[in-house]
Length: 229
Picture 1 (tube, helix red, strand yellow):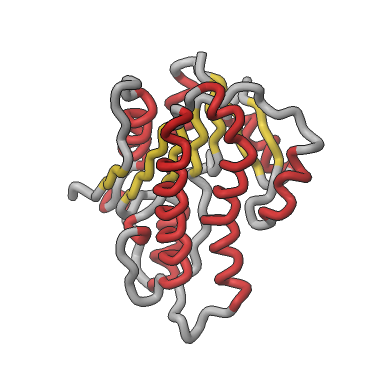
Picture 2 (tube, rainbow, N blue to C red):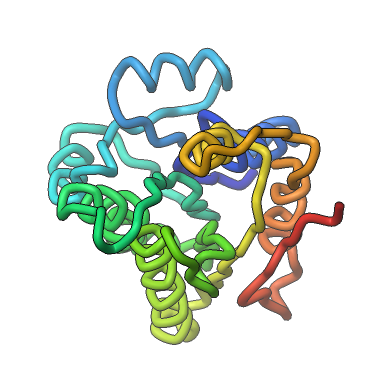
């Protein structure tokens, strides 16, 4: 039975991945930003374990983990949590930049560092849920796109560093996906949100599980998922 650590399991793509893995009987370790959120996740996924650490404060993740029982084995680490605030370069202040870089880039780097011993031991898999913004930046998306471009660089470097240890690394670049984040994006853009126009999180989850379940003789490095409508 495999063990998967997942961030962002409360909604959207992360929740879809967690549901699919839970349904097939795998063990889940879900990251929550605080005790209240951990209780909510435990209610969504009975039997799952939770770890509490605030990704907005990556400097404190190691300290937080030092006060909790860590999983001894990790077969996959799925980075699905993320935050997004739109704005032009002329509008965005340091606080907004820092928040998106912390959650979207620095926290995944720190989590990966902390869980590398378990991933190496299991010859596991690190999955980074990136974004189309990690490949192309558009007006108004500078901070988010910068964090996601950085996430691509993190994954690419990690792949080369850990290949000899048997750790597989996959970056997934979903297009617009029906989720609470997408609803927020539309509100910031001043547009009406129609979930049916965008990718179902279950479809992205299928792509992620395909990468995780691929036989050991192959590895999916980069996977782009675009709306089919």
